[in-house]
Image (tube, rainbow, N blue to C red; front, side, top):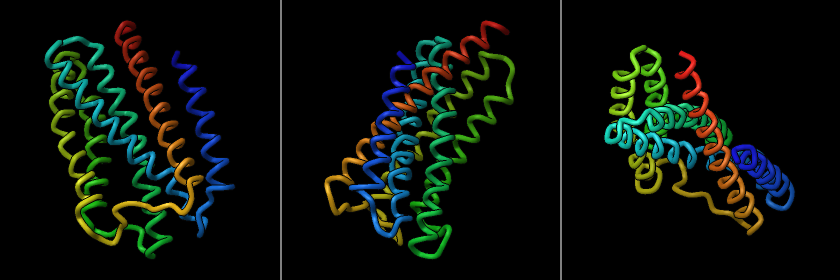
Length: 205
């Protein structure tokens, strides 16, 4: 099943890429990075949502599977938050000549990355499973506080960055839509596989 999800996600990514650089191409060409930036942004928030839910479920149920899924969600969130911030800086440099500005929108996105990194550091700092899982679950819940702030700063707080990106054709919207679906499917498969690896490592230890 996981392989099927991965294959579908890759097919959708290829379709999105083909449309993005043919019928849905944006001028100037650097703006096409939006097809990576926006899906990465959405996916990082979704992964933080997964971390939040799995952390709550672990504290309630005390089942290791929720701890594994939370850890996997944090790792995948870290990857997509990294892509989010890097592509955002590239786009900002091309659009406004600045790699980064101290706007609330960018600060909240940077905090998202640091929270994911802090979770992974915290998790690697403990050996005893029970204490590690409990502390990480609490931190995962607290870390989610930044997610609504990222959304609010993007939509309601005006700064140099656009609150949304308008398209000129339905091809462009289709390319972005396919990229978002593909990225979320990819993240889901990665979380699934990483949780299984975590489970196997626990058994081996």
